[in-house]
Image 1 (cartoon, rainbow, N blue to C red):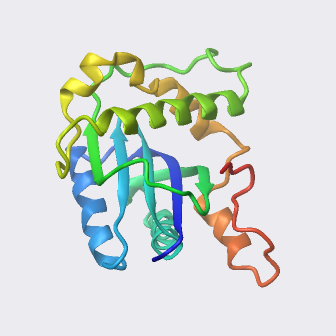
Image 2 (cartoon, one colour):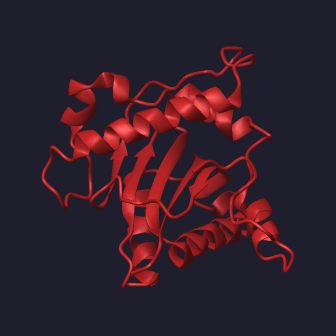
Length: 202
């Protein structure tokens, strides 16, 4: 049995993506290309202009994801995922938070970041995101397994589970968070001493 890891990253959605569900289909296809012996669980939340993506799997699979994100950067504006930033890469997690992988298009109104989070620490926003992700995982255990899309009723019944789009936009602007490029430079270095990304948390 492989050691389990969890990757959480945020990204900007390509303006060329007409149907956000296509991004969910894209990741499903990518997972099928990876190690079939290791299941990928987690959730992808799609906002009007950005995403937050939680993935649980083996280290090999998650590094395939990071390398795919790095390749997308070379595609420029044609890439489906732009400006990815790593929130967390947790190693040796004891249990999966999610039973399968699913996604959800959130039709929240577009929000202008403005000065709302100019004085709020990135750490506190990450903590807010992680807390809500944990609660989303717990709520999903109440729904039938296997569905690739998260039911509308989840966020309708518990609206406080919705991570504010402004929080994700703040994280995308943060210089504290590593890009997949930056992380892989460290990981692929023969001198690397830790797998954790910069300010990553377990």
